[in-house]
Amino acid sequence: MYRRESTSWTRTLGAKEKNRVNKLENIYRETHDTILLYQSHTLGLFPRGQSKHARVRDNVYCAMSLWALSLAYRHVGWDKGRTYEFEQSAVKCMRGILFCYMRQAHKVEQFKKKQSWENALHARFDYITGDPVSDDDGWG
Image (tube, rainbow, N blue to C red; front, side, top):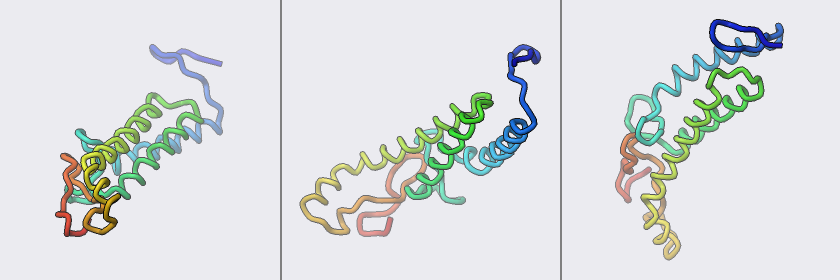
């Protein structure tokens, strides 16, 4: 059952569906204000706090939460483009992590030959450029 609202066609919602949509809208606003506003435009990584460092673990958690919200919007079917926004933000974040790791491919080859901490991959990067934030002998 559809009705016309201004210039777009929308489906009329029941009371339960309206409640779900309202909850998702609240979650969207919170997610947008706490996560999406801080995503890097270049690599899609999220900084840790006020620093310019991005940790892989934190970024994977952010990507997982964004992907879960996209699935919730897809399930409700009332997304206003938010499913696509969350999916693409999660994909951009994961691609950013992959980009940072691909720049360390030489270290993977060294690690295959000699498994030591000196050849381990970095887990902290500059969230704009993707460069490791510490030296090979430092932590991170």
